[in-house]
Image (cartoon, rainbow, N blue to C red; front, top):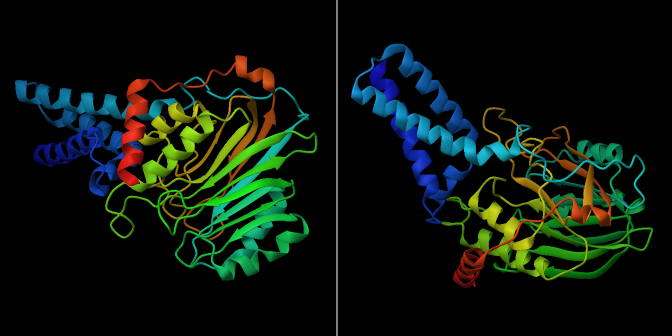
Length: 348
């Protein structure tokens, strides 16, 4: 029993240490994801060791190692629990003057349960819908949305990186970009609200670091940071949404927040784990909304599963310019800017 605890604890400690390494290989960056699971494992091993082992110097050193690793894991995930202060304030307006409702779903291209997704869209009734991993079949199945969403940007692809954007709000300055890789599109446009307010929207789905996708996180990180740097110089209200193939608490996501100055509405509210929909024990927050600090939150929720390996997500924002004084944005220092330049240069 004690030997088994030593082995498991050693593996978990190694996983914790690897996540601290800035190496961008997929087999290192994969340890950014299961921090909650690793923290749970560390706690169980620590309690088990306290129950079966003695008080020798080696025993105490092992427990200190477990406690240190547990502290590192908790430090990363704590801002995304209800124990932390919220980053985005709750709107006090029951009927916001300038509301914006967005929803998106990674559909899992090979699965074909489109009716369930259409039902969820009807129930949520967002102003803007984004569907990812969409090919020509999905474009045909979601075509009925055109009746309620007359403005669209349709980019079906058969490589699991297709995008379909539907909007009931007029779209301006539409730009389809292949920022880092020639087969990975992103959509950038301006939404016009009924009041005339214009909001810049960025829709992203970068390639993840994984054996079947890319050997490292360089293109994913660079795409986020290219967009982040562009946002920082744009005074327009801004929203970024998409499957970023990265967890909320990773170093890259944190760097993106500082470089862009955008806020994360999950901080202080919960993980909102969206992947994997079929495995409750192994779920991570891969699907993201970030927005400028002139929005407050009305509602943010994970929608029911519809057959994909991702849950859809929905957000209802209220544009309140005075919120800027109440919600300070994060700022990047010189070290952050240098790291961002180096990551972008490496990818480009």
